[in-house]
Length: 492
Image 1 (cartoon, one colour):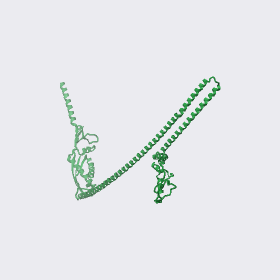
Image 2 (cartoon, helix red, strand yellow; image 1 turned 30 degrees about the horizontal axis):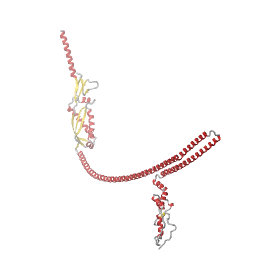
Image 3 (cartoon, one colour; image 1 turned 180 degrees about the horizontal axis):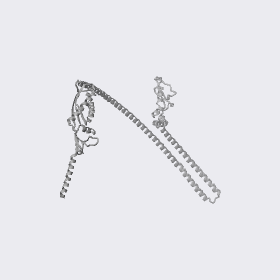
Image 4 (cartoon, helix red, strand yellow; image 1 turned 90 degrees about the horizontal axis):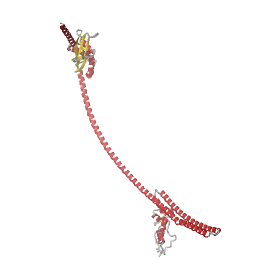
């Protein structure tokens, strides 16, 4: 018996646990996403129902119950006709509205209170009545032009008015679609025709403007093309002119540079020639100085050195003679020795004086020659420095210095000619007021080489203070060479 009691207790406990589980599972309700779970009954103080969207809750048995509200959208066709506008013109606005139960907190409770248990058709009719009334209110505040022209404003006004009223019963407006707007008087149609005509006119105007713009653009393009072509030709011509100018400038610069190079080359040649001439003069001066030194040394070696040797020889002979006389006359008295010594000293002094005089004479001649050569070298140096810019002037001056010797040589050329007698036969006739004799003497005097001709042959122009030669035409260019006493002409 006790075993049966234990089994009975265990079975009873298991049945109780199972019953509690079944009861709990049957009262625990889950809410789908497309529905609203409405718990009503003993839900709390001051609440008529508790709405749950998405989730689950435990429904207390006996004191609570539940139902679902469907969130499926409901399309509603609104055939609104004869609604008065702001101008008291009746309009027809067939539309389609989409509504559904709202999930907004506070609005769901309104739906639970007013729509719970109603069939969908009843909810649709309720929403239709609300929409009809609000559409009439909105249309009464708008003119035909606003209704016809601004559909967005119409829809916005309808949505704002309808949604406020729908939330009062727990619904929300999802979409508004105005299918058409018409009126019984044909005003909207006339507005449409006017708009169409205006649009057609605008289109025609735009087409004409487009054609005009096209023609203008074509003309403008042709104009710009011609302008650009002209500018291109002008720029090409200008470029050619500039190129020609550049070429001319380049050629001119080349010629200038070539002339400058030639001038510099000629100047360099002149400078080089002057340097060569200067170096030649310096070398000549150094050679003359060396020759003077050599002559001086030769004179010194030929005169002074022999004199010194002679003086030493005389001194040696005198010393030897004195020693000999001293040895030979050792026994003589001091008086004789002193006399002889005085004679020897006198001769020695005489020889020394003669040698010194000869030496001083030779040194003076050598110094004079050296000073002459030094002065010539200094003169040549100064001449080269003064005439460095004009080398021809130095050459002319040197030739002028040698001119007397040239004249002397020219005179020697005719000095050996012997003329015993000159016989002139004069017929008495002549030209230019002169007879044959005077012409002969003038020709004879002019045949002598004047000094001016010699100077010109040497490349020198003498100053006019030295006289001028007389040309054959009678122009005075030098002193007259005619004889002051011309012999009288003889005629036969």
